Length: 320
Image 1 (tube, rainbow, N blue to C red):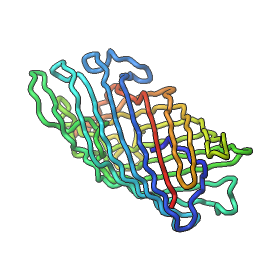
Image 2: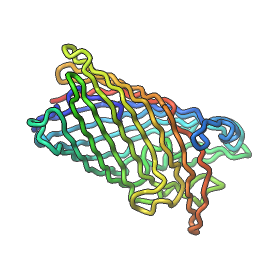
Image 3: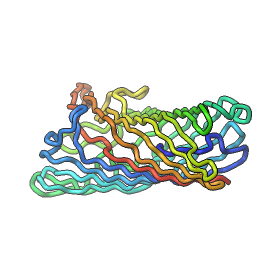
């Protein structure tokens, strides 16, 4: 989920468990052309509006002081509102189980002897348990409609297996202050999903793209006796132009990135931790997509689409 700070960075000992519940709200209502907001380039000159609610449950088991396993089960409820071919605004909706992931993570240094700083690496797998074919009404120019898979941006799943690469690191700088760095990259070996774009692009299939996210910043224990900490940093989320493996440029994708200022608050009470974060968008940009048609001919599309305008994260975790 991201956006969630921890007041104790190596808080699980051998054979301990942690259950975390995270909620994310994403809102978007601005159409980007490259790195500029320009709603006039949106379909029929009207911006596309997104409301996406997602939640996940993560169960962590520490096999040792240094190695843990994380199982994450997400669910998603997303709505995309746009003016369709009949020149009327309609909502498309999707809801369901997302793609479940299992990640193993290990601290490179012994947490018992390196409490002031450490680095952890993670490796895992994402299974295509979420539907990427959730359908809703697609309206045609004559006012008729058919059931068709909704836009990829609100589908519960992406239709492919994935390999998850993770890294996190921290360093205590002075009393109560900790610098942190965290990143994740999803490698998607599958080039194309089994869902084509609506007409007139029905011969072009959605890509199953790689995805990345990274955060860096400073956390400060504001009220030690009350377990209250605050953090401030930067965050970047994006889809690369090229995949690392799996045929990279096939199909259609929306490559680009968005950068946020990332403030957060965490409150720890005994074995429980509450977190709240609302990243503030600083900049964003979309790149031209090298859409490849079935005949193998590249057909670049303009760098236009939507980027998240508002994010809200709320989390609760408890150690056992």
